[in-house]
Image (cartoon, rainbow, N blue to C red; front, top):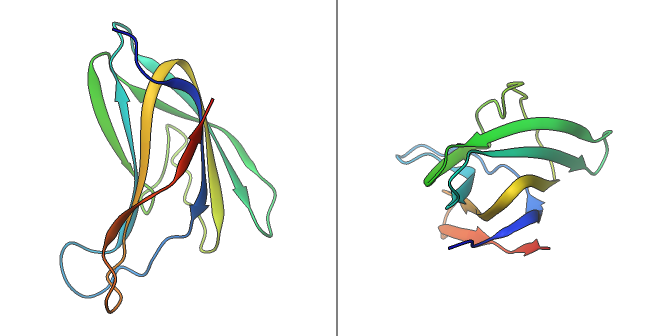
Length: 119
């Protein structure tokens, strides 16, 4: 069964402070690939005050889910996302399902998904 879309956009990226207790604050991109072939995903990052970072490559094996922590170097290129607001655009060669989430450890904050848009 084919599920998902080939293009995903998440407009509210902004790495939270890690905090002092486990699990540490972070953002993560979770990608489900229900296909019989590996998903090759090109990621573009848009920033408020910097030029875009284009052409980052993510891979998700067939019939798998991968979690990509955004506070770790991202993609095969190991790009480190700078502090500040950013947006994520994913373009996959096969349909995928993508969810973006944030664990914010500041007082009275918690884990929540960031709304995405798919085509």
